[in-house]
Image 1 (cartoon, rainbow, N blue to C red):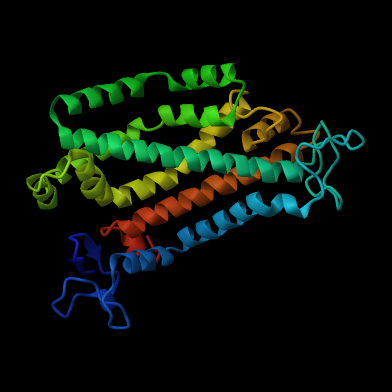
Image 2: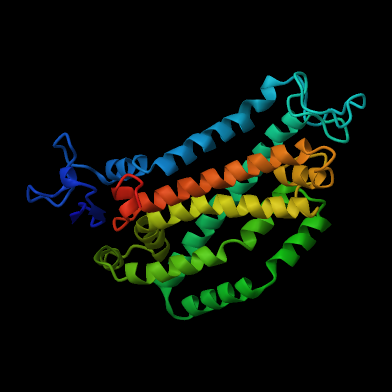
Length: 321
């Protein structure tokens, strides 16, 4: 397998002979004889990973279900039917009802939507904070860098779960507060990695040229350092959704996350945990959605990592390890 560099200096590996750099150019060549840009090369490598493609399909189906699933049933997730308590799944109630007479299908669609909104919002915010703080600390150096790293290391050893539980409980489980506290205690690990990578980027010629031209430090960080961390941030954004879903589910399961009358996958799991033997559908459906969501996001994250990594044999070989 041969490798070359794209015009912007990013290493790109040719997955087969058709992408070999045999014409003296450094940019990979496709089967049609045209030069492949970075995006086309990454997309081709991602599409060859069958597991990643399957993850995308599952994720899209889950998103469609969360967005339009409630439109397929006449019941609302908050409507209680006291004549149909703990009713088993059937032709009228596809997923059955819970102990309060709420339709499990409508609750599952809304709960998945709420969990997705929380997970995506937290993941985007944590990656954004991590990128700015980590890259900024690496570029500025000196006391700023030392103070930032000291803060990161301090927050990493703080028992964040206890703080999350306390704050969420005191503020009555508002999901917006949950987003805030998950973001506050979720950016440090990624920021540490971003800082480590950015320490080498700050010595690159384009950064030194921007300094020589009098560009402000904040603009250098946002325009010249952070964009060159794109592959790292994209993978962390994707995998961050998985960790946030698990955190939200755990907190809601323990009563510290989303609370009634709102619904999330975590609250549904908590409600169904006590009736696994008598009413297993109350636990099975939200558990299945949680597993599908986390597995699909993990597949997508692994696929993105392999596609963006020029040394990966998975992306180059179409998913064969």
